Length: 250
Ligand code: SAH
Image (cartoon, rainbow, N blue to C red; front, side, top):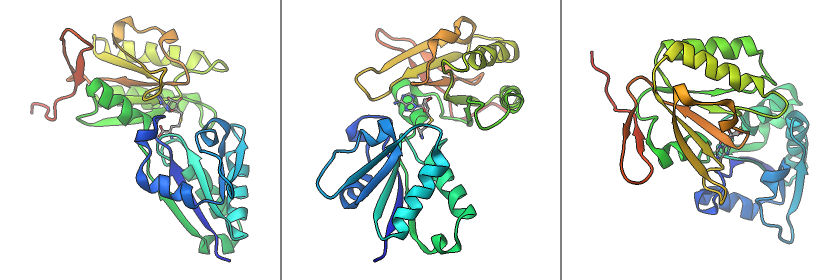
């Protein structure tokens, strides 16, 4: 029996933002593996076994998925957003590289999803329309000094920025430091977008000048987009549009 392993992105939350190929892969799966709230987004049906697991066990979860596929099961590992953006696809490849050689012959595919920063950017207008970078502000898997270095260099290079995992209860100070670094190095009133729970019923989008941002504006359901020096605001009666023009003067 030949198994398969698909690593799929479920998008930011709304069912309409799950791609048809991910829907098809879930329809053919015998097993769905992932973090509890993401597995909860998959409808139960006869013939499908759900394997929800806790956060921070990504390598164990990946090995489990690879073992199931080796045993002939059709496994889908689910992530929110895109599985390649601070999510399960890299964890599966870490486990694959360290695991038995036979795993490398498995049918393994990664199916993209709409990542949080793109869903958030679309809500606000086009803040990522010129060069930008994405930074995971969690220091679970890298030292804070590296995050700080990247923030300073991204500010110097005048990238627009997207921040994932901006602030958690266990490390509230990281986002406070992030705002201090940006307020020091950018120093002007460029717009910051706090996009929380995008495409879910709890969605909120706030556009705040960098100089007025405070740490409590973000939590773990927020992706934060920071404009570059060229990012513009189009004021109107409703929420403003925020966009970054395609060109920079030479
Ligand atoms: N693979 C995911 C990211 C996982 S890291 C993706 O591509 O989107 C988890 C972080 O993603 C959260 O802390 C938050 O910063 C962001 N995020 C995920 N879903 C979101 C949503 N619906 N709205 C806003 N931010 C979201």
